[in-house]
Length: 154
Image (cartoon, rainbow, N blue to C red):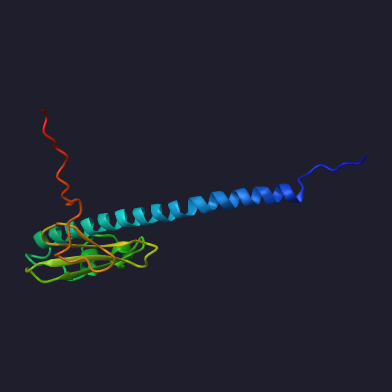
């Protein structure tokens, strides 16, 4: 009897089905991880822009904040990627009001790149909102209250 070595069609179909099941379980986790990484990058970028605005105010701005990301980049306070206004799935915008203050906003390009928007101003507090539209009235990051679970010992 002449028998060839190899896999039968049924064996190959079983392997493909197993790979499909594993992929179906892994893809949602991958998307969530990517969103979390993009949001962490956006928070870091908002912090960088806020620090750059304060440095601009104290240095080359002579008591005035920068009016745009381009002004901060021209003075080498932020890199060209961030100055372009889009990084890691987020759009960034800066408005400077002379010596009266500034605002920094970061909003996701789409829901697949991030779920929260971020805001900061001259106070240095980074605030967030689910979806679009973080503002000065949004809750601060890490300011979730929570109190802690004290009980009374008896």
